[in-house]
Length: 331
Ligand code: UT7
Image 1 (cartoon, rainbow, N blue to C red):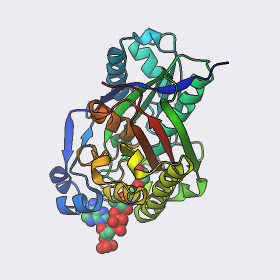
Image 2 (image 1 turned 90 degrees about the horizontal axis):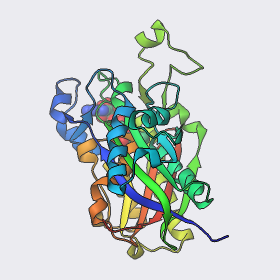
Image 3 (image 1 turned 180 degrees about the vertical axis):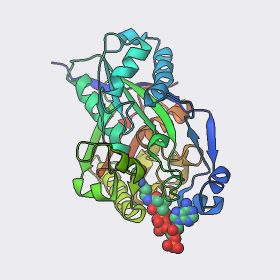
Image 4 (image 1 turned 45 degrees about the vertical axis):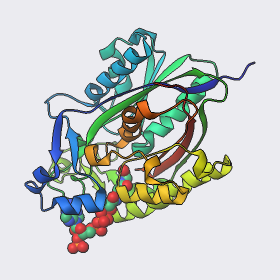
């Protein structure tokens, strides 16, 4: 049987209009613009304000843009994988809700929960689906409405996160192009440093859990920072080494946008200059599963067929990983 190569063939994205600036956060918690910018690199983040709207409402315009660019109808989609930690509901999967909203009537869908690495886990899964010959196209959407699980009286977390969605299509591409390699890792001992305490089966929602603010992100920032710096830099370097890639071979690093200092450390370890690193954390903050596809969406026009791109992420779980993509098209 002839080998099938799987690659990204289109990108879509969406961020809500409302801009939550550092200046506005100064009115909400004891913080200041200078602290936020120097410690994280963030100036503002987008927030989905409308009542009754959830992650699927962020994902829908991203996936519709993708279909338009690719010139296909939602009914042509065969599989939808949604990476998110803020599903519309605990169940059913948000992927199913997205499919229903856009009329992807022939797709099966499911969610992947791997926090900030969710997009990479989903891309790796989708790649295997295409390479196996079982499916012709798979849509991967990374989406999070982080504002739904953030305590806006906690200055250590509310300054970081934002809402957004990015989507890609994976299909068969020319020989030698597409997703070339991926290293994914996880370590459940990281749970204690970054999690949401209540609302799961261990601690179902009660009046007490709500009053104790246990339905919000809990993060021990410094500990996560230490693991993230090492994890993201090490795995990116490992991916380069095992594929004999040098810094000169790499056109772009697409890093998870959690903290500018983590991004810098990863780029330094890989020997990459700033010009080769996609950074939009200043505009969107940390959108969890959406950071990587939102970067691809913003930089799509600058990407050239054959470009070597390394995507890298680190997040709750802990989960982390890096993926090497040879870009498959010119926009
Ligand atoms: O994407 C998921 C993975 N998550 C991450 O990768 C996040 C990793 N962690 C981080 O990015 C950083 O740890 C944070 C941005 C969360 C915090 O930055 P930090 O440099 O680690 O600050 P810190 O927690 O060590 O706090 C330093 C000081 C403390 O005050 P004292 O104890 O030195 O007096 C904090 O209370 O800064 C204080 N502080 C703030 N001050 C102003 C904490 N948050 C704020 C704030 N504004 N928003």
